[in-house]
Image (cartoon, rainbow, N blue to C red):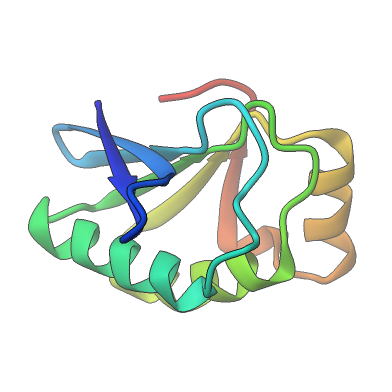
Length: 113
């Protein structure tokens, strides 16, 4: 597993790759909202290209809410991959995805790939 860090060496997400799947997680904690979400976009885009990723799995274990900024990053990334899987969403995250009508863009799963 690789930790992706911002310039201050603070981890922003953890990544591992297996076959066609790249899994991104947040270490069982909250998504860091103190950084510019364009960093998430840039990192995810780089990972998709570096690993020739067909499936991007986002592990939300421990994440109680999904910031709109991160969701805004995931929607255009969806065009670069066959599918985005969202694993371990809380009920409130699942409800939010349905409410804002983007749930159909993602495969929602109960466990990590």
